[in-house]
Amino acid sequence: MPHDKRKTAARALAAESGLPYTAARRAAVAARREDRFGGHEFEYEQANDLFRCTECEVYEVQARSADGAIAPCRGLVGYGGDTERVYLLLTVTPAAPYSLAAFLATSVRDTGIGRAPKWSWRDGKLLVESAPGVVDELVRRIERITTDVEGRPVSAVSSVDRLTAEAGRAIIAQNRAAYVAEYGEPA
Image (cartoon, rainbow, N blue to C red; front, side, top):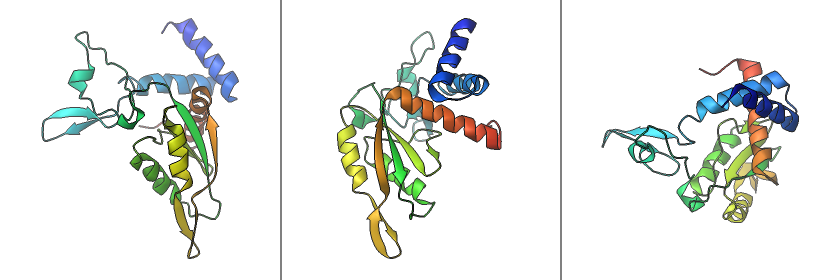
């Protein structure tokens, strides 16, 4: 991306997310660096000596064209090939233990129609990604997740807010910037 376009994109992200320009620019650079595989999350499979995306289940050799470019990830198989994204912001029940975040993220992932992207957890809220065609079903499943608090079952989330793709990406950028401010740039 040309330098001027990067500055414009960083200014837009700063205006949209409320981040300072420098933090927005760092988040944009990090997002580009992290997305060099087209959104795929490749993991090595020892049985066949290949890398396979944990999201869309395509092998890297199939996703990569002859010129080396990688086709964008279509997301979880349960998304039905839908490349549009919507986000849900889940507010964890205040009485629930802190460890509920990992349980909740795993429960959402286990549905096959949603996932918690990187930088999705902050201040008792979990950001969840899905596709428009399956988001209603995901909300229904999330609302049924319970946890034990003082020996009685309670809903794991106190609210589910629907967000656009832009608003979801802005929250990811804010969460990443907050992480970097507190702990430094990830390795």
